[in-house]
Length: 481
Image 1: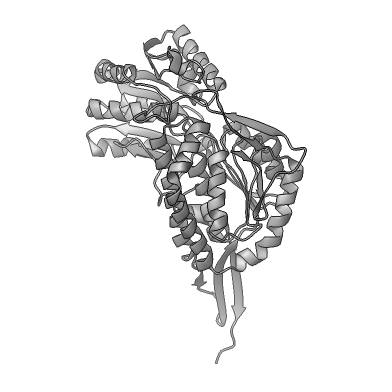
Image 2: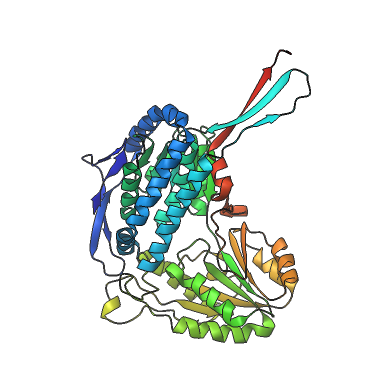
């Protein structure tokens, strides 16, 4: 697939625009290409969005909901083809991509329903004859920046509430993985989305992302990105005080208490550490284990990690594929070497697999490091690759200090048997989402987002829709009858 830009209801391929070739990370074979947006392309898309903003805001909520419902239907009809293409451009196995895409469809259905539940209220007044009416309205033209690791899913997290609220939106698709997104855009268009209400513009963050953040006619920007990118977005957005919603980096602790089911905890840690090769903002980065069960837990997890099989994500039964590119491997190597140089012990992985099947791809074996010092890179910087580092703790106070010690505050995981103890510890952890005996913190009807340097604002749940709405207070004098 060789794609361009989606602007004002149609695909466009303007001349003289930079093009990026996209290769399969498992084989190096060309999959397609994309044009890359710059400031002038952003300006054109904003102009069309502004023209559509008033009519889209006035469109009945049920009509906007019907578009989202129909889009979800079309996505489900095309999920297999979308998943195949997403695997070829990004690397995740097809089963994982089918799950991602189908959850995206659920998100659109959820916000279709929420579109019809934007209620106002009549508030009390201190004076007689005064009525206070509070209503909610679209914030205006919005923009969003989508990451490459779960591009279809997170795309839906952003367009669902924006379109439900009545906001035209410009989407900066990831230049690394924009192809399956093009199929999603076709679904939206076929579902009847009015021209101008969606622009899809792949591009580099320092060019296209910066243009969106600094554009004076965009009133809101939502970005899933690194901390450094989020800081730059905030600086540029300050020009016109646009609303900002940021989901940034994570460094999730996975905590194993002495009374945990060690087999179940190890399975959960293994899957959350190495699913999508650790390229997830809520992946398990550092594993903190009670000293009394540390050796036993390490042995169980090491055996699971050693047995992990890699392959091309399009092949049947493959659960773990390549990383996206060489830069991920370079970062993984740097983090591993730093930990080992500081006294850590390699329990599994730590190398590229051998064989013809892996020769031309970006494969790296899932890597487990034990006794990693707290100042080693995998224990305090986000690897965003297939590395999990382990350390022991002795007391609850020490555990909480270690878990809360970093600038990140997106997700944490806590495994144990005493629910009262688990709840007490969870209350003291400084993270936006905490999985207690479960290795996932995302839930369609609950808010998702981080504390501290992991960002602010929330996606999913009713909070995700509120981000795109402005309250209006109407104070009215009523003549007594």
